[in-house]
Structure formats: C-alpha cells, structure tokens
Length: 191
Image (tube, rainbow, N blue to C red; front, side, top):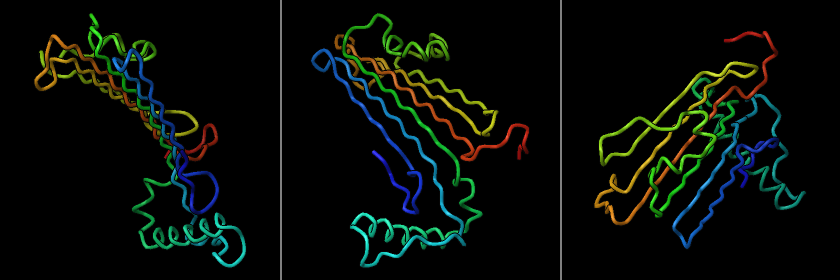
C-alpha cells in the first residue's frame, strides 16, 4: 500500500503487511513494514497545476489534494513542523503467536536474527508478567538519526485467566529507524 505525496514526487509512505497461519490456527505470524518521509515543498515553491478541465480524474484529484494539503501546511508554523519534515522513518513489526506447547515458551518464538543481535533472552520478569526489552542508539554516517528496538514476550500465565493446560506464547518486536531524509556529504557539518 502506498500513501502518495499530494505535492508529487516520492510517496509519503509505503506499507507492507503479511499474515501467515499454520497448524490449523495454532500459530500466527504477522509482519509489517512502513517506510516514509514527509516531504513538503517550501512555501514559495511553485504550485502544481490547478484542477481544471484538462487531465484525467487522477491528475485532477492529485492537483486538488495538493492544493488542500498546501493550504493546510501553509497555515502551520514551519518551525514547529521542522522536526517532522525530511525525516525518513522505517518501522518493522514482527508478531508471532503459538498455542502449541513450547518448552521455552515465548522465548522460542524470537527470530534467530534478533537472538544474534539482542541476545538469547529478555530480562526475567516476576512470574505472571510479560517480559519487555528495549534498546536504542544514535546512528552515525551520512544520515544522522536514531534506531530503537522494543521486544515483548508473553506466556499464557501472564494473561488474565491464563490456563496452564492451554498453552499460549507471544513474541512481538518493533524496530524503528529515524534518520535525516537528505544525504550529507562525508565529513560535512553535523548539526
């Protein structure tokens, strides 16, 4: 799915979602990805052609949406919007659930690549509570930014009314990278 940029150019966001089920519904795997960058032309940039009698429905609709979006953005103080503009945001979501008995519980559902990066196990939580792990760091390189990872593991005993005779495990991970949308030359200024 794509969220087009009403001003033209690259879309504001691209989204992908996949859901797979196995074992007669005993296991579910949801994966999602969003990649976006909110780019708005400068207030003095030339406007796209006005919606008029020429062009097809798509062209006229895009021009009308562009005019509405431009008026909306022009009414907002650009300085207040600056932290949101020209930042590339990429988010990956991975949720795995199982109703199969797993000796390691929700830990068994952690993807191998995350185990390599984060470690084999989240910090222990008191019995009956979910386990949560977080990590974040500044990014260095041609684009300045930050990366974060949040992990959640839930076993059946952490659910209200959890029943040990009916196994349940959930592992969810959300990774986000936010970086400057524009390339900086190597060795350039690092505001």
